[in-house]
Amino acid sequence: MIVCKSEREIEIMRKAGRIVADALAIAKEIAKKDITTEDINTRLEKYVLRQGGIPVFKGYRGYPKSICTSINEEVVHGIPDERKLREGDILSVDIGVEYRKYVADAAITIPIGVISKEAETLLEVCEEALNKAIEKTCVNNKLSEVSRSIQNHVESKGLSVIRDYTGHGIGRKMHEDPQIPNFVSKELLKADEILLRGMTLAIEPMICVGKYDTEVLKNRWTVVTKDRKLSAHFEHTVVVTENGAEILTD
Ligand code: MF3
Ligand code: CO
Image 1: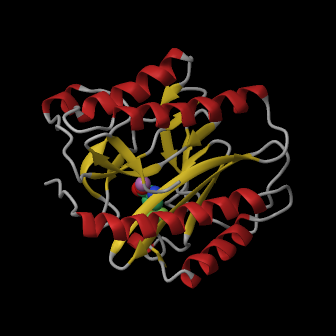
Image 2: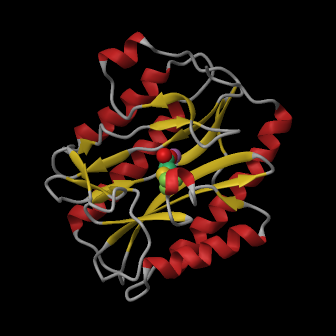
């Protein structure tokens, strides 16, 4: 069941979204060669707590950290540790914050210094796909049109859409209905939804250079591409309004 939020609830989610956006801005500033992903986790966790927010990933199904940091072939759910970033890496930072019982969630992929042309294109296309999807997110549009816009854009550039993970509704919980796949399937079309005012959605294309197949590493969290080629991730939490989507996390 998809829960539409009231103006009062959306106002709280705007605040949660502001904390998320500011935390990601800090990540962008400090993610440099020789910094560890643990350093970024510590810094963002402190920031969120000081703002009166709760980092919701920590403790979620036993997840040990406040953010996810996924490097290069890692798609999502990379766990911050003492590994140092290197020139040419791409780093996805994903963070969810609860504020007064409401959650916002967003992610960006950050280039570390000078990156390859291939990596540059990957990041560019992933962010464009997210923006195109957000443009499709308005009252009376179908959810599948949001998914389709991501798939079309990514595949038109010769890149692949990850299929094993999806976006999601968000609000009182981090994961609410509906699931938001980044590609169109029979199942999606069968269970398609019309977007209504007040729906709050976390739209999150995860894309890659090679094949879309993934596997989970032995730490039981980190998702990588099977072919170990590069992957990128951008995410925003948005609310559906009469005149398109309002982004809550920028
Ligand atoms: N941002 C992720 C999502 O949207 C959640 C990370 S999983 C966690 O599904 F365990 F780290 F919380
Ligand atoms: Co999410």
